[in-house]
Amino acid sequence: MSNVNIAKGSCLCGVVNVSTTRMSNQVGACHCSMCRNWGGGPLLVVECESDVSFSGEENIVVYQSSEWAERGFCKKCGSHLFYKLKQSNQYFIPVGLFDNCEGLVFGHQIFIDEKPKYYCFANETKNLTGAEVFAQFAPLSDNP
Image (tube, rainbow, N blue to C red; front, side):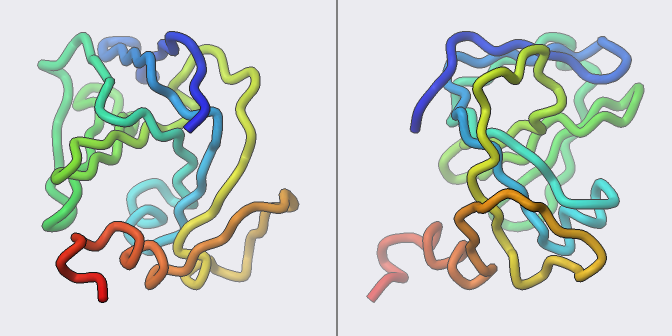
């Protein structure tokens, strides 16, 4: 994963701040029904591994969206703050939270098989279906 230096940002109202030193330069889009239901459209994120820190944590509400992941948001303004894989403590942060997005590239889309026909992105990206995503993140004991 290519990384940028320290990246900082905040929620819409500014009570929650986020920073990381491990932000990928690749923006990804998730088209799954849960992400679209959560935000009204595809979720655009950058992977930040587990190196994420928040200030204003008392304003963060966490929703256990599945057995393997949780989603965080600001309880004051409702901004989406993260999608986190529980097992690996891996954060995916909405790219729009960060102050500086220079050098980022739209690189991949997941759950492409769930993407509605009413929108599309012109960028050429790596595309994965839901089954391909689950196969990629399955525990090693589940892989043949």
